[in-house]
Length: 141
Image (tube, rainbow, N blue to C red; front, side, top):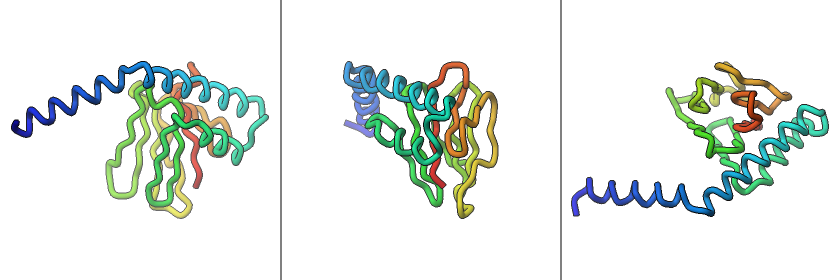
């Protein structure tokens, strides 16, 4: 089997896993947790430190640690992508034109730019695409 056949087989396995019942359950749980965190933050029931703890409690949260940036992303099934356009920058995007540009080299790291419809819910919690209450990014800098 050549490398292309191996790659095709691996891609098929990943697609199958992503559409499995367990993956669907995790995505639904992440979406529900994101909505709960957003509601709590908006009502003032959760402060910046508690938002990070709440986000990290969910086993389906995507966690990224890079240089001085530490992120928890709820609802990664909604098309979240994380890229590194240069050596010290992270971009978290939702595929709908909303995103965060994070300067991870700064100490502490910080959100350098919010693109599109991003709401800063509190000091460290952002909602990408504020209309649906999912795709919540919680930062710890």
